[in-house]
Image 1 (cartoon, rainbow, N blue to C red):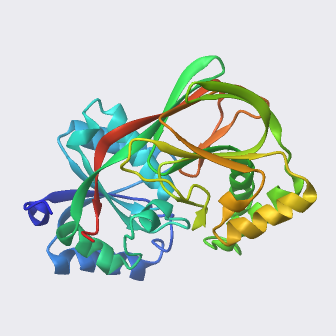
Image 2: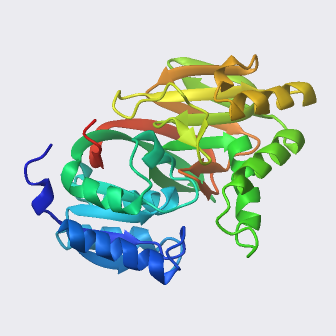
Length: 316
C-alpha cells in the first residue's frame, strides 16, 4: 500500500444521473462517508454525456493527480479519456471508483465494494495498482478517431445489445434496472446476424462471418456476464472472444453458456490472447468501449498499453 494514500486530496467526478444519486439521501450518505473517513475531496458534477472527458482533462492540466469516479463504467471511461487527452503521462495519475452505475463491471473485476461507505474507505485502505488499458483507433467519416478503455471493447452482437439497451433504459418504468441488459441479450441473440469481418492478430489474417467479438482487459460486461473470462488487466495482453455464425439452436445454447459463465465451452466460440488486433473490413463496423457505443469505420485497431495508469484496488 502506498504510505501516503490516506493523505491524498481527491477530486470526485460525479455523474448525478447514474444509479440512485438523484436521491438526496444517497448523495448525503456518500458525503458523510467521505467526512467520517477523513478523506479530503472536492466534488465536480457532470452535466451531459461527454462532460466527464472535459472535466478530467481540465483537472489534470490544473495539477490534480488523484481522481475518484462516482458513477458507472461509462463515466469511468470518459474520465480515462479525459486523462489521456490532457497530455500528461497517465502513469502519473491515480484513478478510483465508487460504483454507482447499472453495470459496474470494472469494479466487479477488482472486487471493489458496491457498498458506498466501504468503497470510500478503500481510498485510504486500498493499494495503488498499475493496470493496462486499451487503445482503439478507427475512422469516422474518413477522419481518424481514438478512444481508450479499461475494461472491454466489442463489435457485432455487443454493439446491437447496447443500442437496444440505450433505446429503452431512459423509460421511467425501466430506469436503472439491470435486467434490461439480459432482455436485450435475449432479443439480440435471436434476431441479430453474423457479418463478415477481416481480422489480423498474432501475425495471422482471416476473413469469416463473426457474430460477436469481445476484446477484454477485464472479465465482465453487461453487469456480470463473463465474456472474456481469461482476461487479466496486468498481463500486457487482451483476452479476445470470437463467436462465429450461429443457428437458432446454437444461439439459444450460447445464451445458456453466457448466463452460466461458461461461454468458452460453446462450439462456435474461439478465444485467444493478443497485444493487438486489427479489423480491416467489417460489414457492421460500429464499436463499443466500456459500454459506450461509437460510430466507427475500418480499419479499426485495438492495442494494449501495459501498466499505463494507476488504479485503487483492495489490498487482497
